Length: 167
Length: 213
Image (tube, rainbow over all chains, first blue to last red):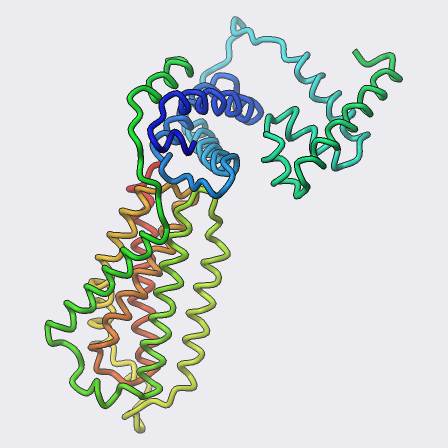
């Protein structure tokens, strides 16, 4: 981001690409599928317009998360104002069973870990935070976060191996 | 437009930007306040007995509490323009500071009050003029804080606007305190509060409408 503030287009392109992936995951959990791309693009535009407000002495993730949260609220408000269309029998929707089952299984598995391990895995492996950002959020050192992830994944592997009915 | 093509558009021809600096913005607000005070005093409106009043507890209380509130609220407003800022606690601090200043006013000995009744002490005809003067004097600071807010990225624009209004109102009241001829703490508490509240309300109502993240 610092390079982007100094006008480095290549670094900015890479940064926006990574932000776009993170934002897509962020909005997928909070908005209907049809609204995700709009919200991602609105947030990228806001990031572009307000990139001078980022202070390099603070981590980037909370700055981005604050803007994304604002855009999420904006999107929810605009959804509330939009007139609802009538649902017809011809309107088919995709099957979400697999993703629902996956998240339910993941939540059950994470419940069996120590809270620090579950939180580290959730932040880094599921939500896509860097180890440094996750350590800042949890309040542990990066090496402790890595250790928690490593041990947590080992424990998850052991749990999954013991449970034959989990696919 | 896909995300990728938007990213290509945004990253091509990227110009360097000047990073936002809270210190620079604070210095701007301070400089504008100083210029406004200097202009106001050079117009010859300073109360003629200022030399006599200079060391009095009443003037110390009035100028000191308004100056402190102006500085704290301005710092809070500028800080709240950061996307990650949570202005609610700072606003509580500013409001507590205002309440403490008002309570301290009860311990300041009023001058020339005599046996006047409450309505005479409040003097609504002059009070409305005082409140209106505070409102007008706060407009340049509101405009500056509004411009800074538009350029920044507050994620709670209503609270940021309220903080800006409190800061501007306190600045306007601080400048006006040098020419206000009334020496009654009750009068000051009532009409200065009215002026500051009007500015804060107007800023809270108007500034978020001109802001879009």
